[in-house]
Amino acid sequence: MQQTHEHARRQYTIPVFPHVKKFINKTYPTAADCVLVDECTDLGKFITLALIDNRAWKESRDLNTPERAAKFTESIKVMLTIQQAEMRVRQSKLIRLNIDMDRVFKAHLITFIESKKQDGYPVRLACRKFMEYFNLDESEYSLDAAYKHYQRAVLKKD
Image (cartoon, rainbow, N blue to C red; front, side, top):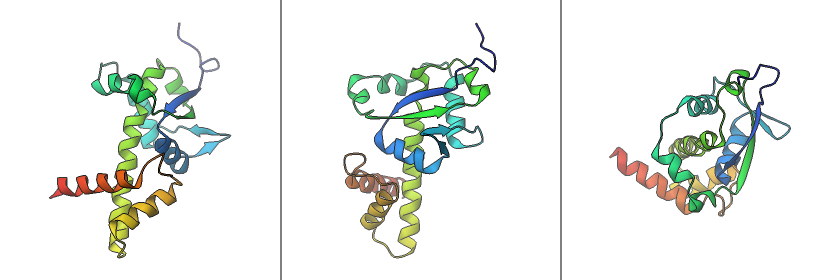
């Protein structure tokens, strides 16, 4: 049964990786511990795409393994748009947000490091500054993981 605008549930809690939570909370508008979704942002577009995509995809199976689920130590509450709330909203679809936002997080990491390098910062110090900016500690996303991700990204470009 299709819900009407007045009755469609709009708030959902999504389990996420700790660094994804801090990234989203720092990057997107929030109100009362709820991330306000706007379909003009990457976050909103990723949610819409996840909701309309009915294909089986490998990453979804990977996210739903007990090992991977153990890494979802945080959660975010999102307020969907009215149009999104009228779609078939499923927790299994919303978990995909972890993969998409992790990619955006890492793209921001590379851009941040490259801009700091232009200012004369060594790569490891730039990684540390990125971590400080998002208030990430080693248990949420390690400095070594950030540095290694940057090294792999540089190798791919060359």
